[in-house]
Length: 363
Image (cartoon, rainbow, N blue to C red):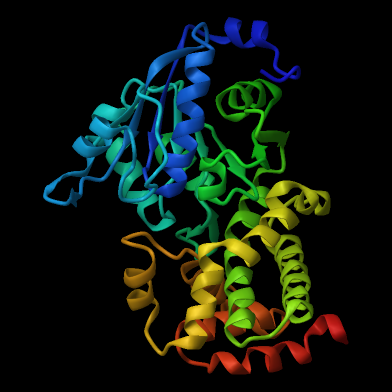
């Protein structure tokens, strides 16, 4: 364990803690590999068994959970990567989460509200949630609602976040990377470091939770723009311009809509590093490239490319477009606006660069 851990402090915090992972796609499975190993290496802190809630599907004529638990591998969403045997896939959400002290949410953001409502009456009052989900929701007032706040409001527990340059296949292959944990106090940070940190997955902790979470959502929109550049056959200079302008719009969005947003947070792994990784290797970059090369809808491309998972970028682009439209601010965010229109097939993707030529950053 890293020298920053205060294991004595953690041990005093509670009796052994039980962990549940709520979600089981490729990122959920990659993080399960880390969590499963870490709990076994800290038997004084954690219960050995980790429930991983998995929406039941059929896989080659069998229940996916049965195959995962037999082979210790998510054969559909993260094939070729062995999971620790203490990770147990469970299709029963309530049974998975009811005894958990730490709830790790890692699923498409559009399913969070319904999932939390199902869990609402069945979790420990003392549980701590942590969201690895990159997206937004909308509150009853029409304003953007952070997923961590949505989880807190429904479950009435604290919710931390973890975001970073963490492409799931690379994390699963134990390639070195960094991540950013956002939480309310030092004790939560110590606990979550002990859950997630390894010698190849290094965790920084800060308290600017909303900015960390916002970066995780907005970088997927910029990633689509980077893919559009690739699809048009343009080079590194053009992609670099998209990254820079995208980052500037992310910072401006934070200034306008995130109370207390700190610019320094954008220099953590959750900010510029995640943006770079997404724009070069993420699934939303792949979407942008295919949007140029095909006239298929987002749903059709999703079905063909992601084997049942979701592109989060188009949903986030739609959500922020609604907010910007209501605030009469679309012209201040030409990159976000153009990507939204391209995803809706309201704009030819080849017009994307023209939308950036007169960007406010150039005036």
